[in-house]
Length: 372
Image (cartoon, rainbow, N blue to C red; front, side):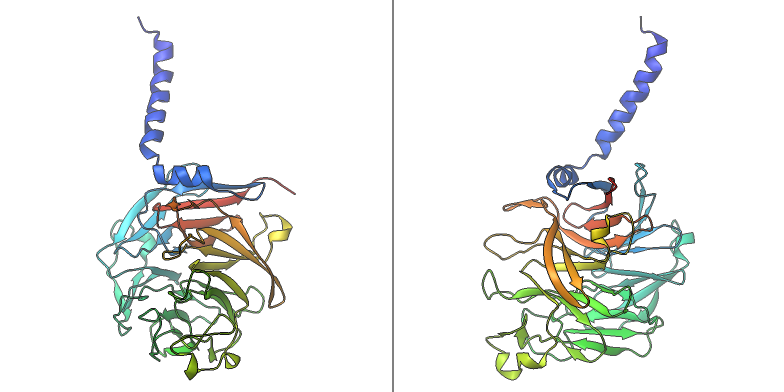
């Protein structure tokens, strides 16, 4: 005969173990088991059921909105760091690579390849999503580098890149960063010569735009470098397609432009590492030495004989000059075996980062638990 005093606790225990097993993700398990971080840091899974998770935006009520390149946009409701599994809702689907998401004045902005839409009052209507309103729908329809990262700048403008529709080509209306009013009016080109930026931010003090750029392919394993760039004012040219890095003339288009006339990168990143998110660490939860460092999510190479990237790196600055470029989180791959690919970084009020991973379909929380 079973002791009823033991049956109830054992039943609860087995239920909890079954639930934990049901929620386990082999992909995220491999990332967590293999990731290497500086002492005191921890990477934990916040949500492991966000397929192809890419760009992130946070609403004022704490809802995390996540774009993808696979047609869906998600809303993740929960409390990072609490240990509780969040609720994940699909709020839009069958869209055209809705990679970019941004939030402003109660509205979620979603960037597809050729248009930007807006969902007003969405945080109060997650179960009955409001109808999308078109903000602007005259962006190029090219799918190659057509997915967009979007963000609102300190000037109140929405910044929207238009990636080059090719590996390397000379088409003036592409390879630019544009900006416009929140209603889509007064669009203008802010920067040129930007092949494919999928991450930008603004300096916390100077409010200058900083962005990553993905270098061209098929010039070998180690060239050209990807880039971290700084745009202190509008109207600058960052070299594509004529010049790569600081002084590498393109073999086809280099004769048409001079490297000496471009705005050079602040930091040369690894070739083919595919840098995406870039964020300044302005929190207080990490040790003092990490304050104001630039964090970069390197998505990882696809055509290099030995894979590179698949990590999070930092760049230390002295004013507007880079003085160190170092790995921070590694282990998203082991040789040709890829466990995860970091995409976006979002700094929370508690000083931790959320990290999206489109390979594992997950959102992680990166935190520091040990005081200096």
